[in-house]
Image (cartoon, rainbow, N blue to C red):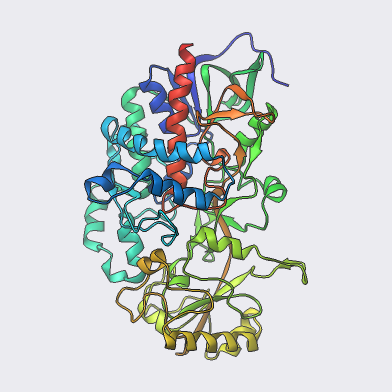
Length: 545
């Protein structure tokens, strides 16, 4: 039951709970529409999951692609998005995203420090109707951290994206490490430049600071205050006590998903997650608060899951570093197999779609048939490509399992030896004929783009030169996709489909508009910031009423 508050510690128009891309955007738009905005951040650093990400936004019909001569249309975008959403979000929500995302990009480019740049990354399912082979993913210009002044050390560091690289530089470097512009990286770092999610958050944070928007760190929102059916404020834990903050226009929940909450994961997700690359503060606070006031929940079984690996002993903020496995499953001379030694998926498709195959449940054995699984590769791969942090021709690390024969390798990691040998023989025959007729690897625009353009085939190569290697993969996550259902104005709905006045949601805390799908690189942040934009505007309007 919501407490009755007679004496408020602070009163504002709009509270944004969370300092990731969604929350900062909501605060900026609330401020620019005449509201007094406040940002609450549970941790001692700004940026949330956005800060540790690649920092891209997937936005159809954006002005940057138009300026570069790439055509797009509402019809194409809707056709593509609705196909991937698979009916798991209302059509009007998908339409609102397509109709609003490009307005968000234009607004930020014209009114804030944010500077977008074009990426050539294809849509993740480039063969679907309405897809594009580049342009909808936007990167961020590098940012000089010292512009933040005393807030410079409050920018959340990333365990993976700490090298200032453009999106295309980083992705193309997977297949061709020599293409990585080392001299430029050194120059950028000497100037204190950051890229990826740090650049996006740095620019949004500076835009908030320039506007005088207040940001409270180490302030954990714990309970929504309701009066006469309307959310009017928050109970916040800060400085070791309860602080009560009134919000005249509304509260915007933008405090991420629940991937770090073991109880919630077991309640809602379809399978296990062993590690996460997001900050450990994403424990479902927004979900809990919204549920307490009767919010309807949707898309709760979905998460941004990827095949991952943790290098033993590698830590960030005292937690294992979850590394994304991309080239190790996409480039030539490698395949993915399960315990039976069998391939089970097109290894080159985007990580979100691969996760569906990871969670295949075998009713005969009553377990997940493809967890764990392994990348199997040979010395040809090791001689040409990076393997996580290991450069080609570097000494083999202790954590990489190696053997002179496939059967020996299989015995070492617990794979059926006969199954593995048969699968590799089958794979080599498919490579020789130049086509993967089993799973279609190498046919998609995205996987070919991220593959090795200089190889005989960007994604296909034989596994026939010992020694052989095995890298165990598990299901890791970058966040969850489920939460309170909202309408096109960002307002949270209750279980009867009615608006909960004064409550908004944006980002991974809300029911994901993409349903089970993933539109393209930056699809998470693009959706989140679009609803931050929408929520900020509408909460500011509500404050004027």
